[in-house]
Amino acid sequence: MSDFEHVHETPPPGAAADWTIAQDWRSYSQVEHDTWDTLYARQMQVLPGRASDAFLNGLHALDLNAGGIPDFAVINPKLQALTGWTVVCVPGLVPDAVFFDHLANRRFPSGQFIRKPDQLDYLQEPDIFHDVFGHVPMLTDPDFADYMQAYGQGGQRAAGLGVLPQLARLYWYTVEFGLMQTTAGLRIYGAGIVSSATESVFALEDASPNRIAFDLERVMRTLYRIDDFQQVYFVIPSIEALKAETLKDFAGVYERLQGAEDIAVDAVLAEDDVLTRGTQAYAGRGGRFAA
Ligand SMILES: [Fe+2]
Image (cartoon, rainbow, N blue to C red; front, side, top):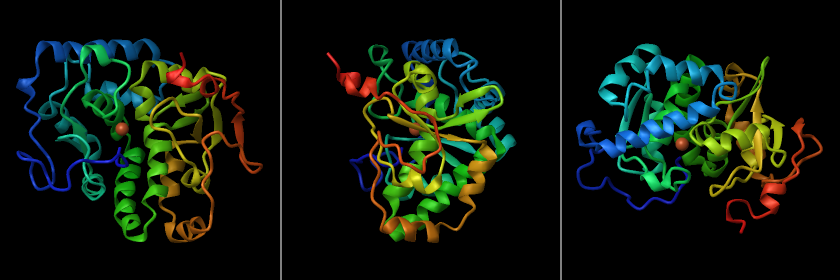
């Protein structure tokens, strides 16, 4: 997640110039390893039949259920052999330019810490479970791997053009909260969904959210919420199609977006290809904060 406020402008003490830190796998306690195992088991109760094949295959290929928090020294050679990506540790959220540089070089920055046992359901900052369980399996898919690198390269260009908020929405509605159409039905590929037991069910099955066919400019104009389940999910036809979108020249896209108004999270436009028109009942009740 690149779009949160961050505290530091320069690497904190102990971090390298590119903001990476050692994972120091031996420093994790048994309680922390158990937290990973608990979260993993809980997700596997809900993900078969809901998560995309690309995600489930990646999970299997990297053997992320070998017992406790994965050791990057063990999973990186497997990931690198598949798509050239590696995972690196960072001390929390990093500046946009640092984040984009890692992605552009096929390095995925992950938090080092894991949530406490009493915070299993909701965290404000991404931890290693969100980052590794949620994001890394998709990086084993060759097309998704290319898409993520292209996103990092696009971020470096967008920063100079003043269109980072628009590009961040693309990341949000694909990498974090994307759904995919398959012959077997809708499936999840977004890390923010697959790492949440409750949103995995909500995103696919609840009547509240809108589910709208992916359109690049529509997505880049749409606001999002970071504090609760999404009110709209965008559905890609395939990972190949998503990757093809990023191979377009964004210059014309950005030009058109300059004069375009932002779109509210619950809006449905006349030109939308709507798969599910949501009731918005969940948000209407106050969502997570309902009494
Ligand atoms: Fe994330």
